[in-house]
Image (cartoon, rainbow, N blue to C red; front, top):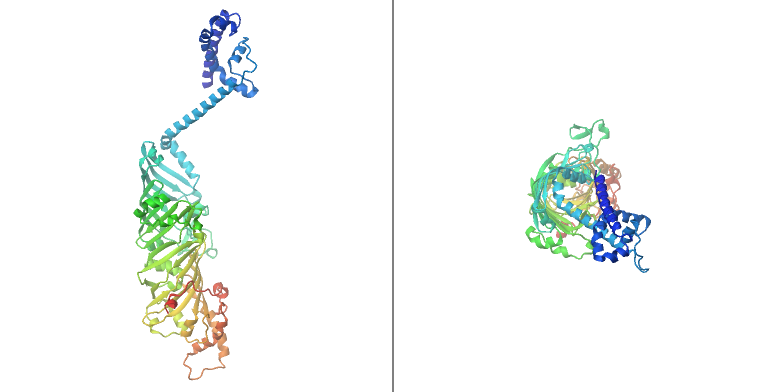
Length: 622
């Protein structure tokens, strides 16, 4: 219909043009538009008569003329062509007349018209954009685009936006794909700005309130990883029915013999608030909830508050308000020659105070220095943190000298995210309970000391270094500890190293070592300074199993040689000590070798004895 209307309008214009031409032709027989007509009437009267006809013709035929020029490469659209098309014989132009000037002016004019129309259309679209987004179809289009960037489905209940009014978004939800179970991973009740959209575009400072965000950070029982992270990385497994049996989870149709034992990880809500400065926005987060493993909530506390600043200018302006030191921002360290916006995050909860500082680098962070944390001792910290580092820390009752555990986190290359993160814990003075693990150690050595007979023992640790891998075991470097110190007692020196697999019921693959000073205290003479008796430790962090048989096999084989050298009556060492003494006489020549015999534990059978992580604190004091 639109094309028919256009054709009709052009046809009317052509008829009008034809009447004018016919009238003019009857008045000037010498030819339409010829020089005789111009001489008879004069140029002014000629133009007055012909301007309506020429205008009507131009409105109809100029586009077609341009199209014909593009195809045939001819000059069409000038006054000469009009006259020739009507059968007249116009005056011949001079030889040096530039016939293409009119065409280029026409082309440029049309290009300018097209550009103007494009700018006008863009302006209209931009003016209507908030209204379009606020509509039902516009909202669905926005959520469809957002769903292309994250796995699953993004939905928004309401969007209220306008250039002259604040932005108000309500009911944002993100749901994982139905193939993974279709559960809701994150939601926000409301996002609202304090100023109009036009002022935000102009760069004016404004407040943004995010109300009641909720994020599911629970642990996937099958892999032991945070489920939402797996969904984002595309590594989450398809949902399958499971059967709970005690403390294990069995997939339907899977036999117990082919299933790794896994603890069911109970989740609980961890409430939080947050505040941050990002570009020109001061962001407030209220009434947030994270669904986290219950053990993490017990270590952190029931709630926390996080503060963040992004941008060097914001850092200098707002650092005092947030209690953040900004002096590091201008550092010229070569490691940060290619840095982005300066970023600082501070975390505070009833039991934990932590902070990290660095620069945005791509999709992650490049830290200025290792992140630090001060964690208050709680029974949960001992059970879910220290005990998984080493069974020697299983029965920690208290942390002396302030009751806080100081630690630092050093991701590989100081870049986040990282394939490996090293955690360093400063030396601690502890009170540990004499549990089954420590009791068996004391009984093996045959130690008779009042400091070791108490139910609670004082202990002193070295610096503890732990390597944490996102999808692997937790590897503890050599941990040295003195047990039974205080009141003039030196204490039993023990050490331990190896790995724990949190995803496999915290299975242990570790080695317990008895250094030379402990062996001498037990009455085993002739041991060099770098000698060590090692014992394999397996089981789990909660039920460790010590391979005493490996140590006894070594002692027994040496005892056969000792039988022909019975001790004299003047010797006061016990039979067990004498056997052990004979077995360990050659220990000084076994530097960097394991001396407990074949045990079936790879860590105890083949690994070299690692050096201490740092100078032992009790050795420094001596």
